[in-house]
Image 1 (cartoon, rainbow, N blue to C red):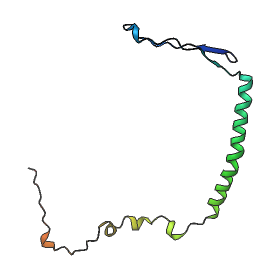
Image 2 (cartoon, rainbow, N blue to C red; image 1 turned 180 degrees about the horizontal axis):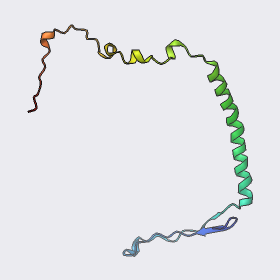
Image 3 (cartoon, rainbow, N blue to C red; image 1 turned 180 degrees about the vertical axis):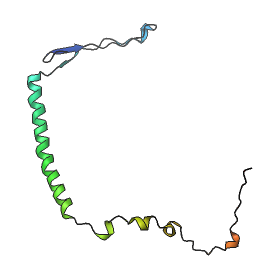
Length: 109
């Protein structure tokens, strides 16, 4: 398809084995392709306007993120507290009697 030209199409739906199901031909539907001499300035204008909008928003976002100092509540936990095995065991509201715990070992011979 060449830029700057008109192209038209006519639709007709039919089944080769069942001619009664065929539709009448539609009226021609035409489209005009845009020439490259019109398309390039439009694309450049779109990119320029988008940049004018996004660059100030990015600058404001970066300025705000620099001013927020990290506090103790949004700091990550230290490695020792994450790896503490006692902190991984859930606390039971009911005391557990050690006699109630049964262990079975399977022997592989």
